[in-house]
Image 1: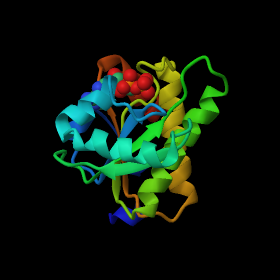
Image 2 (image 1 turned 90 degrees about the vertical axis):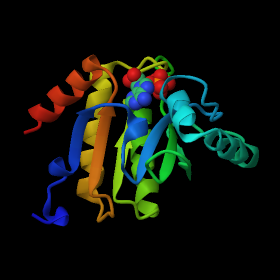
Image 3 (image 1 turned 180 degrees about the vertical axis):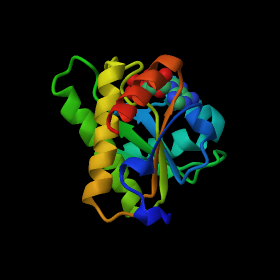
Image 4 (image 1 turned 60 degrees about the vertical axis):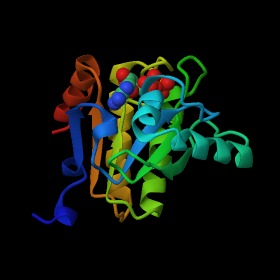
Length: 181
Ligand code: ADP
C-alpha cells in the first residue's frame, strides 16, 4: 500500500518512548508561552538537542513577545535526530476552555508541519504533565485532532506519532485509538 492510500487512522501511530529519540521530521515540544524550556519534556528536548534550541526560542520571544496558548512556532533541532522542533503551548488545566485550546495547539502544530512540507511528526501528551490536563481526555483530543486534520487536508504529512513516556499515558492513548476501530 502506498502511503497516500493509507487512511487517516492508519497514519496515526501510538507508541511508548522518549520523544527526543524519534527519527521523524519534527517533534513537538509541550512549551510554555515564554518558551522557557525548564522542565518536563521541554527540558529533555533542550538537554538532548542542545542549548541552541533555547537560544533560538529566546530570539523568537524577543521578536514576538510571547506565544499565546494554542499557537505554535518552529526551531531547528540541532543534535536531535529529527529536523525541527515545533513548540506548541497547550492550556493549563483550570484556565477554562481547555479542550478547545488543546485542539488548537495540536491543529496549529500539524498546520506548521504541513507548511514546512514535512512528512512525519511526533507529539508527546501535551498539557498532561505539569499543566495538569487529564490524561484520558488528552488522548481523545490529540488523536481526534490528528485524524480530523489528516482527513480534511491534502497534506504532506504521512505519519503522526504519539510518543508517550509512561505506561499510564500510553494505556489511555492505546485504548482510545483501538476503540476507534
Ligand atoms: P505540560 O506542561 O504541557 O503538561 P510536560 O512536559 O510537563 O508538559 O508533560 C507533557 C507530557 O510529556 C507528560 O505526559 C510527560 O510525562 C511527557 N514527557 C516528559 N518527558 C518526555 C520525553 N522525553 N518523551 C516523551 N514524553 C515526555
